Image (cartoon, rainbow, N blue to C red; front, side):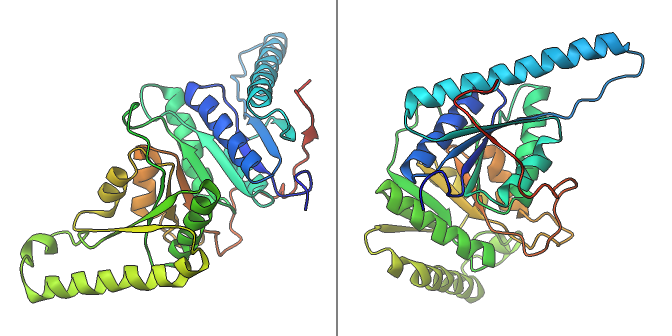
Length: 316
């Protein structure tokens, strides 16, 4: 299958500094995997009825021009970094989370950049990334600008180990990424998320049993996947703190952090679970959320299974 007919890497474009990093990260991923890149900008605009038609028409025109400028700048940045990469663009007036969830049905990956601190716009972008990660039909990678800016780079993909369906998918995705990037995997499993039991059961046989069981979970999960990737070196981290804390620390300087969805998409709790929800906004490196929803319960508006895109070097 050639790059043009393959499932693309889709990246949301909003013009923020961290989003520009996300666009280049997505372009690099697409180029490495010989996939096309789709640059997407969307917005759902509401206005007060006190505005005149003329004022609203002018405002929407300026918003449209701004959106086209953002896409054009994103295309130029990608062209400079990856001159031969096939690029498509999508500009739409709709809810961006709904559109990206719909596009995820025919994508290899969705990439987003979101600022986690300091502004209302950052909060809005954060809510979009949360919604897309919670409902997408393909892996979602989020760059959030969090963490030490000068962390020492480590050639490793970090993955949280879980026996759940989403955890198994995340583990295989992590090994695939490590093979593509020619780096190692650091598998992290925590036995410390016991709440009061961590303190009440210290140095007892019950606590040692918990540790043995959790260690066996890690061993069994790795045994199901690692054999398919003999070229990927594997390190293990088995720790007694909460999983999100262990993964946040392990991810400093890493190429990628990978976590799985905790539940099916039709569960009345968040599909992401507490660990992935925490790390979406706290991961010090790009984070991939993996795990296809079991149910067909998409966000409203997700009936756009195959949104049209325009192949272009730049938007009009």
